[in-house]
Image 1 (cartoon, rainbow, N blue to C red):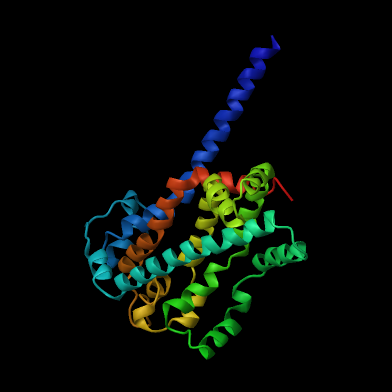
Image 2 (image 1 turned 60 degrees about the vertical axis):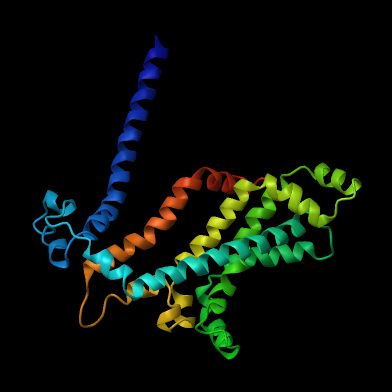
Amino acid sequence: MTLPNQMGTTRTRRAIVAVVAWIVGILFALPLLWMLTGSFRTSGDIFGSVYPFNPNILIPRTFTLTNYETLLTGQFGRSVFNSVVVTFITVVVGLLLSAMAAFALAQLKFRGAGAVFAIVVLSFLVPFDAIAVPLANLFRDWGLANNYLGLILPGIANGFAIFVLRQFFLGIPGELAEAARMDGLTWWGIFWRIYLPLSKPALIGAGFTLFLFQWSAYLWPLLIATRPDVMLGPIALSNLATAQKVDFGAIFAGAVLLTIVPLVLLLIFQRHFTASLASTGSKG
């Protein structure tokens, strides 16, 4: 007699949790939907339905692509291209360096390995913004201002990416490396032929971390890349609002363009990204 009651209670709880989750999801999605629909409106139409509140807030009265045409044919389009180039190089180079460092910390036994790993952990606990200003002064002295190299270098050394990859490498049986060494394979061969092919989820998770750090960076590009031809997307987006004019339609369109790329990547690789994060605490 009690079992059906318990099953009914469980179903009721699940239904309540599902309803609450949907409500929370819709509330989080509403600002994004408003931003998306606002990008296809004129600036005057965006706020015409806000007060009094009515359903037209998410339904454009006039549909226009002018905001996107203006952005993509102007300076903003060049800035998005700069963001793509800088982020791509950062992810590729940073992922290779992070994987090699993680492999060394996970498999190579050398004096001071624990201290090096502790420094790596501390490096991603310190907010980058805390050291951005003095680091920017050094980069200017070294002639690295207003070029791609100055934008890329701080992003390729990411302590969290090294941490994630090291924890995943520790979960790979050490017998594989020992057997490969007995067959005459070098450490580079073991890393390239055995560990990297087995580490797809961790590589995607670490790569996504590098991508988000570089794609959404604002303070560092603001300090080190002030010239229009090397300006990145987030800086160009903030420059759309001036003291004389604020074009909300263009700002919404720019925000959509800068948001759609990480959103699509996260939807494609979310399973691997979740798996990589779940493995970070499995080994010490």
